[in-house]
Length: 88
Image (cartoon, rainbow, N blue to C red; front, top):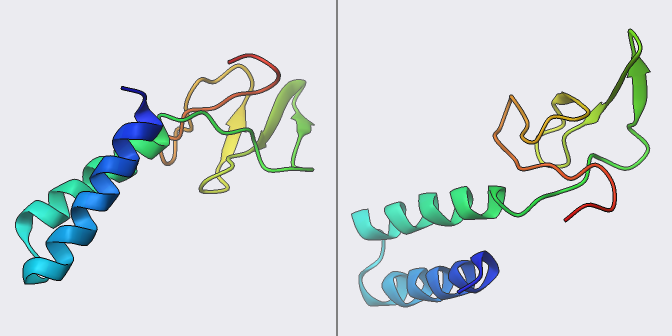
């Protein structure tokens, strides 16, 4: 199962739980799991945010806007997985 598929299943489960009995501890746990899984899907830096700072290629995180430097694999601020170019 791919991360994207797991996210879909978990989101459907949350919808069912919400209809059944409102806010639950399990729903909260699933929401946290979805957020963590979504951060594992690599995102590019924000468009037009690339800049060179002290000779280092930098940009802003596509999720939180925090400053990130190439070749960082994850944002130090929010934990979002990063993709800088055409790599997968």
